[in-house]
Length: 488
RNA sequence: GGUACCGUGGCCGAGUGGCUAGGCGGAGGUCUGCAAAACCUUAUACAGCGGUUCGAAUCCGCUCGGUACCUCCA
Image 1 (cartoon, rainbow, N blue to C red):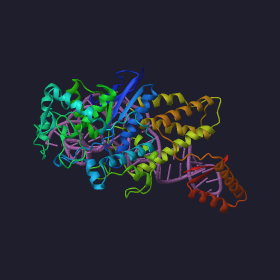
Image 2 (image 1 turned 30 degrees about the vertical axis):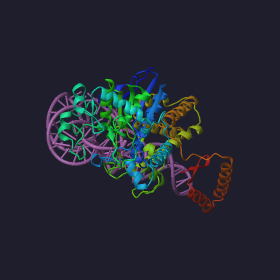
Image 3 (image 1 turned 90 degrees about the horizontal axis):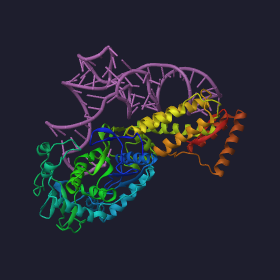
Image 4 (image 1 turned 90 degrees about the vertical axis):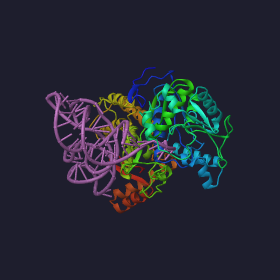
C-alpha cells in the first residue's frame, strides 16, 4: 500500500515515512487509563489523538488492530508506600472491593470516551486478566538473566541489561546519570540499584489484590502489563505504540527493556507521544490536583468554569493544537473553539442550499490535496481545520454571490467536509436540527405567525417570539429567503 | 543538578529561509425594523542581544523566562 504518511517517531526524534511491518495490517497499542478516578481533560488528549490515528489509518485502507489497555491492577502509590496501590487505596477510602472501583471508573471512562466520539479500540485488555501472560514474560526475562529475585519479589537488572542493550534509548537518558540522579527512597533495600524496577512484587498481608506465582503471592510490576498484552495481541514487534509524554520515562523505556530482555529485539517500530494539556501554564495532572474532569466540563460544575462545555467543543479544542504541542486551557480558548466549530457546521449545511453555477471560481480540488498533505504531515489537524475554515469562508462567499461553484464542485466540497470534518476529525453536530415532522410543523407555524406580525410592523410581537425561542436555545435568523432557525 | 522541549499580535494556535496561516476577540462599514449570521476593510507578532545569509519567526551562539521528565500521573 502506498501513502505519504509521515509519523514523528520519538525513538529517532524525527518524522519518518510510515511503513507498516505487515501491510495492510497495522498494530497499534496505546496506554489506557488506570481506573481509580474520573477521566480528566488530560485523558481526553491521548484518547482523541490516537482516535485520529486510528481513523486516518483506516481511511488510508489499513486494517488496524487498536489495543488500549485498562490498568486495573493498581500501581503503587509510591515506593515508600510499598504494599498499597492506587486502586486499593481508593477501594479502602470508598469501602468497596477493588474490582468495584475498577468497574465503576471503567464504565465512566467508556462513557466519556463515547461522548468525545472516539471509536472504541479493537481490543481493550485488562491487566488483571493477563496475570498469566505477565508471569510468563517474567520467566523469559529471568531465564535470559536480566532479572533477580529478592525475598519473593523480582526486579529488572537495569545495569546488566545496559551492557548488552541500551537502557535510555527512547528517553535520551544515560545510566550514569540515572545512577547519580535517582532519588533514594525508603523500601528499596531489595533492589541492587535504585533504578531497577519491579517485575513482580510480593504482597504484604494488607494488600488485597494478589495472585499466585512461582516466586510469591503477589502482583505484577508497573510496566509489565503493556509489554505482555502488546506482545499477545500485536506480536513481538508491532507498528505503533502511543501514550502521553509523561509515560516516556520510565514506563515506555522499561517496556523496551523488558521486550529486549525477553526476545532480544525492540517491541515497537514507531513510538508516538502526545503532549500535555496545561492550565495556567502548568501540566494538568492528578498529582498536582489541578485537573478538571470531563464530566465537570460537560456539566459546567467546576469553579474554574463559567458554564458547561460540550464534548465536541472539547474535542475540537484539542484538535486545534498539534498533538505534540502543549495546549493551554482557558475558558476563552474553549469559547473560541465552540464558535469556530459552529461556523464550520453552518458552512457544511449551507452546501445544501447553494445554487450551482456553470463555472467554478475556486479550485476545490486543491483544498482536498492540502488537507491530505496536512494529515500526512504527522497528523497536522490544526492545518486541516484551517483549510476547512478557508473553505467555509468561500462557501459563504458563494452564498453571497461573490464566488461561484459548479454542481460537481459543490458535491465534492460536501464529500470533503464529510470526510475530513466528520469521518477523520470525528466531529459531529450536537446542535443540529430536530428534523421530526412535529417540530418542523410547529416551527413553520410559529415562524409564519411571526412573519405575519412583521408584515404588520408589529415588531413587539415578532421580537417576543424570537426572545422566547432564544430561551430554548433556538436561534432565528432573518434572511432574504425568509426566517431560518437552528439550535444555538 | 541531569535530560529534553518551548517562548508567535488581547486569547488560543499553525508555520522551520523569501509568499496573508487560521479561529476567537477588538475597531469601522455593508445588509437588516432591530438582532443574528454573513460579507468587506482594519489594527495588534514572531522573548532579548549578537552572528550566518542577498534575505530569518524559521539556521547558529549567548542571555533571560517558562515547562516536562528524572517518584504515581494522559
